[in-house]
Length: 194
Image (tube, rainbow, N blue to C red; front, side, top):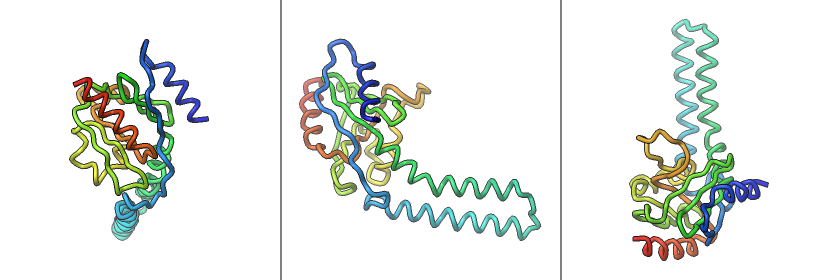
């Protein structure tokens, strides 16, 4: 169903004469995969510890406001479920390479893309997921080993433009079964555009 919705969205955004050359999607991956196990466990432990300390200090200092307690618990709950939300988000992504651009359509049908002639660099990151992940745009290379999954959920946008969809400065095509095929195709077209 989601794939059909994404394909319908794709048909609506393709330009006249634009041809799809490759398509893929994120392959299933475990929540606590090697790429983020320590980070997620650290987040859960840190969140629980911080919530307990804040609540203990608040209550010990005669704090009896239920609103403050509820707010601390709500923030802690949001932080604890965020890895599940992030995983679900990445699993719902679909990717296309056309003769003009690379397109990512998220599960909620938000469209992000990079023009082929606007991709300054790209890399395949391996060893973090079962399959390789294709990282586009040098502006996201600096922290990609540490934040691969997060960046897959949050394409790098131009903060000056104020947009949250559309033309991106950096994208991650996460855990692609055919990562090598996508990379080879992209290499041909990016070199041709340069």
